[in-house]
Length: 281
Image 1 (spheres, rainbow, N blue to C red):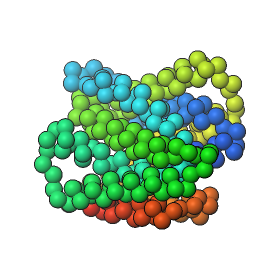
Image 2: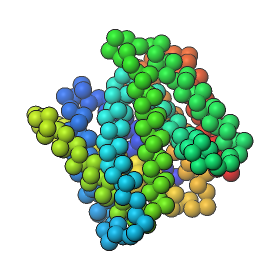
Image 3: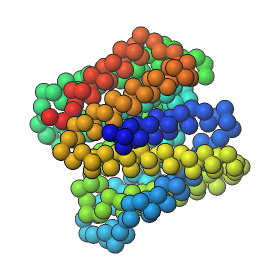
């Protein structure tokens, strides 16, 4: 259980770091770039990828490339959402993205689906509407498009989830795919920053290394949790998603004094209800 708690803590800590970035004069773009330096190093050290596995004829190179582009892009979107909409709503929107693969399975792949999952999708979509309406009601001039950023977080992380599921069907080992994905994402971020002629900051570098540690820790501990409870994926699924929403709410509302409208509170409750309905049975 400590492994799951560590994964939840890392996930919420990422949002906290993105929240305080501007006040600490941290360039988020630079932090995200250096985050991938840490991620590549930790992947090599802990996951021990086998690069030869990438030369399998069934390797989905297009998926790896798509993830390499999407991961840093959505990271920037998440940072903007946290700044405008807050930790509470951003974390909830990110966790609700799990319903996008289910919608894709029905609409695109024509899969049949259980009534419980249909209920979860309905609750999740309703929760998303409540969250976006809640962010819109509490808007100021500084965050006039908060609800759009929340929708972008939801769609972006949902697409990433679909791509990761597609990647798992390929021939390449997961650790090798992660290594290439992180490397490509870092290369694109550094290239973008160089083209912008960014002024490099030491604090952004250090923040990026910490961000990479937290981001990788979230993934690593989540994988380890599934390995530790191979016969009880329900525990991992529900604890992770509900835990992040709950802890995010406590941190955002309790420590950062984020104001929650009635719509936002209802949205968070519905999000937890959706996750419960979607628990594998």
